[in-house]
Length: 342
Image (cartoon, rainbow, N blue to C red; front, side, top):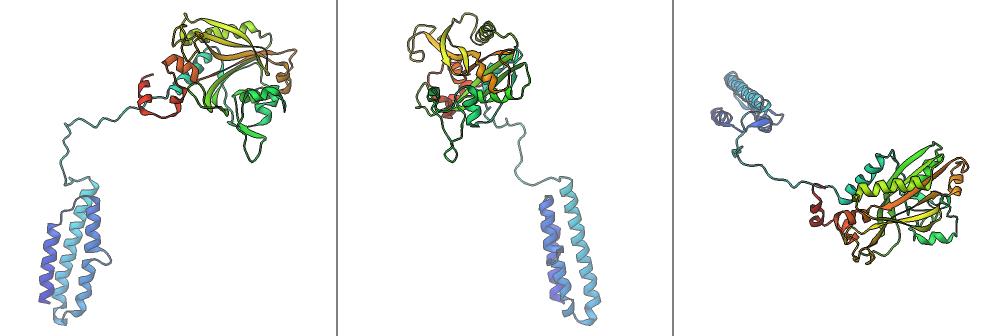
């Protein structure tokens, strides 16, 4: 028994000196001294080895030891719950904080938002649609039936398991889906990513971004289309930009045109981006073909409309003086940092 009493004094000293702060320290103490396999339980198991005439005396000493351990645990627990002072290195609150780099919007996202905001001021609302599309919404409904030669204008990525499905080649699929709803008049802007199987170079990529617009109502004319696009160009590039329309061909519009502006990189002097012509084509446009309206159950005798479509990368290149379209998708931080605050 004398050996047990001496050991108890050692344990008592350890308890009094225990000073691991916080909730974790309190839990560690509980497991060590008061847990089901803790020291108090172990010492109680030694009662069977104490002589009968000493059991009462040892029991009192052991009970006092248990009360000491419980009191110590309660003190540690209360300190941990109250967020007691923790030992460790002192934090100097006067030191300046760590500086984290500030992110920036991608120039494509900034340009897309700028384009959309200009047309929203004219009453256009934003519409979105799927990037994986069926042949009807991407081609046939747009007056591009199967084997139509104009399909060769867009080298398409088809889904190998089902050629009736493909990666959309333009956001015109959104226009078809919106027209099918039959809610007229319709004035929408359709931004999104599109895919074409093209050779990657400084001027073209296999995926890029488009914003297309559509306006359908009674008595819509080509003059309405031109005034809408004049407003857009002046808002985007300023009042000094020069504009020209060239006759063109698109299966889903008639008549059709391409719109050029004076190159903003060389100011019309000629560079590799404008192929040294001083002009840069930024969008295609035209009056919606009557067959497209019929495919969407819209009466072409009552309603007319115009449509236009532009890439986002080219206006961004003009706006920010970028000469290589590949920079947009290479994720070079040095390139992206230049657009902080744009």
